[in-house]
Length: 498
Image (cartoon, rainbow, N blue to C red):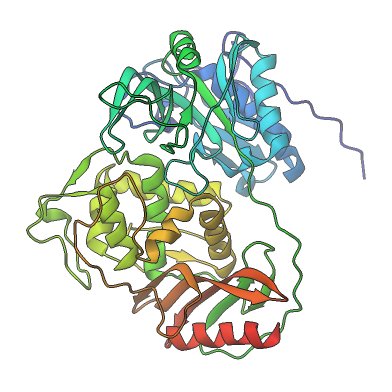
């Protein structure tokens, strides 16, 4: 076989890219505006992500894509009046062409990928913020040079609503002093990216008292003097590269043996070691019913600001097992999440999605699935009622691993326990938890569902002692006629076999 010539990662600045023709790998100013997409911010902001930053990101992703056999990039740029352009990976075959979007990206948890992206920005002399949440350092790069480097004093607690996920973002808005109504504190020198994430100085109470050292409000917190300096130097639209380590397997080894269960599709796996203990065909794509709501909660966590109550109108109602919204004109977003995850409320799912716009919310659900590498997963609505909400056992395992390691507060909500939170909760009184199974005391979180197309479905996590080690075991069943019986049988297999 002929040896393929070496490829080089090149970041192309918009200042330098003035192509004579529309060639692969070039920036095409003003071309195909209908294909451009908005930046990850809420689309009411008029400032767009710089086109040059997009070109740099393309160059960085090229390095990563080469290992997959991707040979070239086409980047569709837009004029200043058009939202951030689509970034396209173009391979040798049509099916290898993929779009890359701004926002939360698991790939930025890979040190080499993040470093390549950052170095591409630096090489092209761009201005951007680098937030390294592993090293706890924040750097403002001005035209390729570090102009400001400061310590990150605190970040969102791991798994919490405020944990800032790795990704490529842009500064959407700035506010000299932002008041957080749920934390009841002022956040000086605040900069917002992707709607729900902040960089700010040290918060203080309305009487002027700084919050104590142990205060865990989340976001990316800097010392006041550093936050003020960053605020003064950073215009709206500045790219923000966030790096955070992803979880890694711990090497725990099992010897798999498949038991007989009644579910058509089932999976038994160790969350931390990714060891599959028992399963049917892991890649069969089937309806998943209300397991969809796990993604609904994920998207809400990343795009909806909890710092407000949500208005409820009659047209948002849908069929649900236990109606709770009749007569309600508003509710806290946190209470709606409780209703969504504990009683599997279809009403709550629709109200949550309506805060962004239902169709846009569904697009974000599918984009999040792609960013997590869920190749067999598609979402058609925020509740799971439609049979086009589909996935596979393999994808659902990846999804629950991501939630467990990055958004564990979602799992905590599914247990219906009283959690310490700054958010208003309990708007709907005592809820009936559909997720628990009578007689099992090892349940630590999960979600159930049921429709005619999907049968009974379930994802649940259980803490079980194996070889004198406490392990977190995931049980996933699809198209079951006896969810409690199948879960119990699979867990019994683990305890007896190992």
